[in-house]
Image (cartoon, rainbow, N blue to C red; front, top):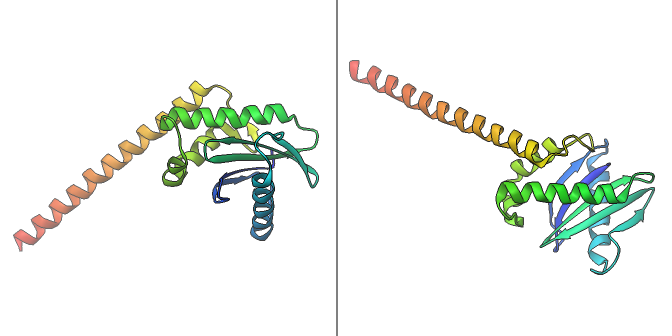
Amino acid sequence: MQFMLLFSRQGKLRLQKWYVPLSDKEKKKITRELVQTVLARKPKMCSFLEWRDLKIVYKRYASLYFCCAIEDQDNELITLEIIHRYVELLDKYFGSVCELDIIFNFEKAYFILDEFLLGGEAQETSKKNVLKAIEQADLLQENIDFQMRLFAGTVGEVNIAVVVDQ
């Protein structure tokens, strides 16, 4: 996979993951062009299209389009399955994912994608294993946040004690 884009029906980019090195200018140009192309297609049309020297595979879920670019020799159906698996992972994590979940928790959406795909290839096909890794990362983050609050409270008490002694 060359890249994955998530965008709304209004053409707002919500998530982008590039697996090939391109300049920012080229990324913006590609994004603009693909968003316009995909949004211009009718709902009953095929979810595959040839674009430049790549194949574009996209699928709409509610108000979001999930769009991937793959090499000419890659399998479109596997890519469609990868898109679907990512949506299932988002659904499981967020409990019926919506566009706002992606907007306000984009770091989690990227983290889930990174647990699932590595270098544009499916890293882990088991939803259970991906969700377990995400759950462990969430627990670790909660533990770190808790320890930071404890440390901040302890530092605050030390500062108060110093002021009282003087």
